[in-house]
Each structure stands twice: as structure tokens, then as C-alpha cells.
Length: 334
Image (cartoon, rainbow, N blue to C red; front, side, top):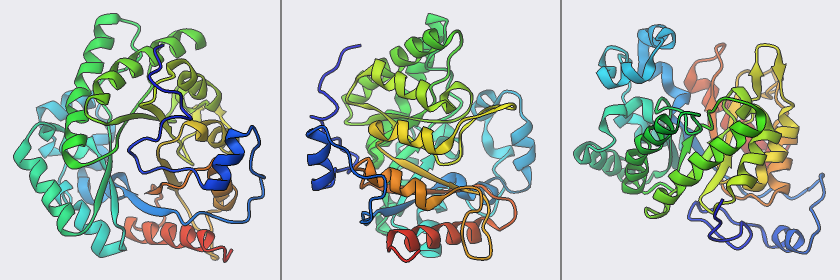
């Protein structure tokens, strides 16, 4: 794969930076201690999926059971999006309900408006009016970027073009995509890397990054996804490590702490997934303190994107508790 710049030479538009000490140690061949005591003053963003129940309303189950979501989107999501909030309400909700000043959109919630400049202008106006920064668009249901069929792969790549354009219009730094493929470990790595690089070459003309989340299947194997990044070796291609998405199959779950550590060298964003909280305000199944140390030790100082997916609390309460936990750890009061 062609590499325009080495990963260490490039400082991408996402706003990420390496802490001076961490960068100096990394470049000199040393690494920061696993027990780093100084936590960067991370900023917090909100992923739109955290309020998906408010967006879908009672039709969420029907959407989840749809066998061809991409077709459903194209036919019109109106029959699904029947909640008390819309995509246009997202930036205001982030600011006024949670005092969060940055957002991560999900394309599902404005699937047919990717090239609707009037609609996108309204999104931008509302975010700007609340002083909310648009960071990225999470893109699903546009086909497999590593599809073994060359024609299908090309179509999938080209279907993502409109989201690159929308992200640039909104002032985002990235689109989040999926590294779906089929075949052997090596075949999937090569196919996914090729698709990512081809999309990244288009995205580069818009100053947009193409970042991959561990999002089920082989992409939830941290070692495999890291190998895709190394194969792609493109300044615009990176990762979005997700704290919770390490289920490869019904019978195989990847170690989340190993996985996050493997993906952080390529990270241009981080998704802080949460599900449950105990009486002390901690996530009992995800060691946030340990994971945030891994994130900090990688030299990452960008946004931490809250993505609450629990069922025991309301979405709003789950978001508040996730934010409170993050703030407590960042402040060093744990």
C-alpha cells in the first residue's frame, strides 16, 4: 500500500496530539509506564447512538429485526424514526442536557440527507448555535469495504464518498467505517486494507480521515485490525477503539484490554462504551480506569466519545453516569 507520510510524521486534523513527554519517549524508542499517574485533561464528546431509543421510539425493535437495513434506509427511514427527538435535535441535546460540546453523528439518522445541503446547513447552524463541535460521522449499511467481489467493493467505496463530503461540510475530522470482508485472515486483511486506502485517497482531498471501529466479527480481533492498519499504512486511515465491542462471535470474545492497547497506536478517536453502573458509579464489567490509562499511555489526548448502550437506566441517566465516571477518573479522584 502507498504511504504518503509515516504515521509519526503526520499530525492529523482530528485535533489529536501527543503529550510532549509521551511523544519524546515514543520517538526515542521508549514507552510510558503502564502505571502513568498523570491523566490528560481529555475532552468529552457524545455519540448519537447513545440516544437511539429517543430517535427510534417504539419502532426500534422493528428496525433491529429488519433483514436489509440499507434497503430500508433508501426506502425511507420515516417509518422507523418515530421518537421524541430527531437528528436535528442532537447538538442541542448534547449541550443543554449534558453540557457536552462535541458530537459524533450516526448516518442512520440522516441516511437520505448526505448530499442535502439545506439539511446539512441546518445541522451545522444548530451545532454552531450551541457552540458544539462536529467530530465525525459513524457510517453503517453502505456495504463491505473489503468485499471479495471487486465490483461490490468498488460500489461500497463509492457509496461512502457522500459521507466524506458531508463530514467535510459539517467540519468533522473523520468518518467511521467498518472493515467488513470475507475469506481467510490474510485475505480479509488485504481486501479491507485495499478498500480503506482507496476510500482514504478520496477522503484526503477533503481533509477527512477514514477510521475503523472494532465492530463485530473479525474486526473485533485487535491483532487483526492492527494488522489491517499496518498493511494500509496510509496517513488518513486509523482506528476508533471501542471499549465494549470485542465480541467476535457467539463463542469468542477478545480481551478488551489487549485489544484497546493494540489499536491505540492508530487511534484518531476513542469510543467509551458503557452498559451498567454499580452503587459506586463504576462500570462493573469494564475497568474504565485501566482502559483510560492504556489510552493515555498511547499518547492520545483527543476526545473520549460517550456511547451508552445499557438497558437498566434511561439513556439520559446512562450518559450522565458515564460522563461523571470519566470526569472522576480524569480528575484523579478515583
